[in-house]
Length: 171
Image 1 (cartoon, one colour):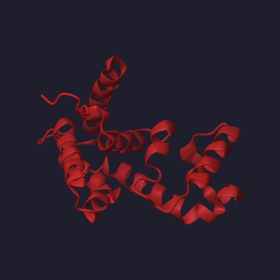
Image 2 (cartoon, one colour; image 1 turned 180 degrees about the vertical axis):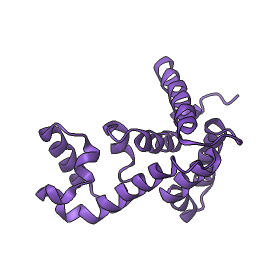
Image 3 (tube, helix red, strand yellow; image 1 turned 120 degrees about the vertical axis):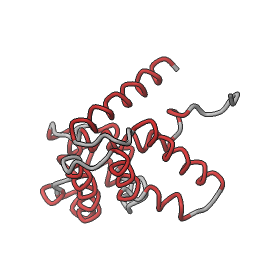
Image 4 (cartoon, helix red, strand yellow; image 1 turned 30 degrees about the horizontal axis):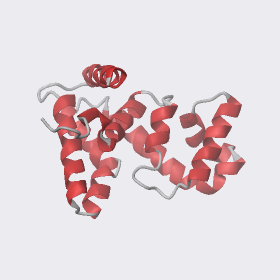
């Protein structure tokens, strides 16, 4: 046991990967979407993200609905391609849920397509090596080797997410 260490679900990289999974499962999760929209960096400035957040609030829509249709919102048109590239990643991953792929393969696709692994591998520091190990360890909590299919993936994800939420409430 590590005294004074960061608990597993408190680690930024674990929260980031859980946020990806949450947004893939529920595009209306604005809190988690804000966490990952520019993580890894996609060239979206904080002003662009904040503008999209304000537009969504003003329209009474989810943030995802605004960023997935940026040409309908003049103030974020300059960031349109970056926003559309991000939403294409999320939509592509969501489509994989219906292919019957295994949970392990699905999680690996999330790691790769999100660009998270590439970001950590681009700077081979000891910290990034540990962070990469942590996101891969999360795979073990999230997956069951022989199971596949959209319903089961969502079921397993919801169980893991509930466990993380309970942990965060009590710690």
